[in-house]
Length: 354
Image 1 (cartoon, rainbow, N blue to C red):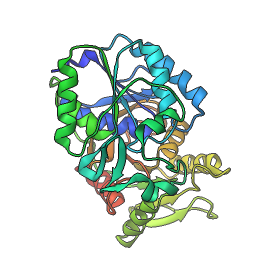
Image 2: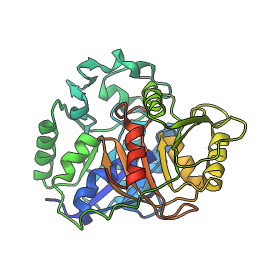
Image 3: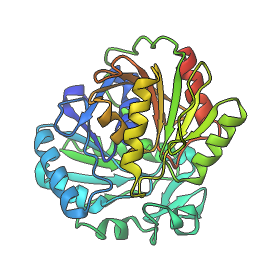
């Protein structure tokens, strides 16, 4: 078993950091997510969209802060989007020499690895929609090649086609009783969390909310399906560029921003944050890692208490500071989740129950 004090947790974007916190919350109780220099339980380096040189240095600093921890978990995207090699290279420079195990598979949602290659539902990654990803198109399915694009890391690349494969990997690695850096997605995080000593238990759920807004800056087709289903269920869709946003009542509003690659993205996030404050929102859902990060920055929310997750990839919790301190939130990445993901987010915000 791993003691909580021996474990360091970090992720490359805000949705990933909250997903990681949610994976460990059932054993540790609510975890606080902060920026890389904020001293929280889970550190968000917000490095996925950075150039490799900047990402390497940011992770080096994070590694220095976590160097005393014998077990480190570095949350990655399941397809290793971002400068993954540079991040691991920088993190190791800060941590010092240790065993590195890379396993990005999440078998329960069809993301597996075989012979060092990434698959989704049995199809090679380069033959899926990820080949045309709007932010990080995948030209190779080889984990080694993807890492080598931005950095040089001496690591064990582990295949995993089942959750049992990941659990065996964690158990065999921990049995070596040497400092280790695990790098992977939620499948590996769950396997490691099962070997953590139990902590304080679950938090009291937040109260139900009345004025709900979901804000999306995602360009993914999956998000569009999720929005369409929520609108069919009664939510109101509005664009941030619309002249005069509708007065919010008890009907959830979905506010769609331009995507994070658009020049006007940050301006759209600023408008959205102003509207959230003026409208008296008391329940907030966010889709997209860049959207979540920049929106919370503008709301002054630098500390998030993560309580748990639903539908595998939707985290939920409470904002601890900023202009909406005490407000419940839900969050997910743009490329993940079932078609009813936004409806599940609304349901949680309305009831305070998963």
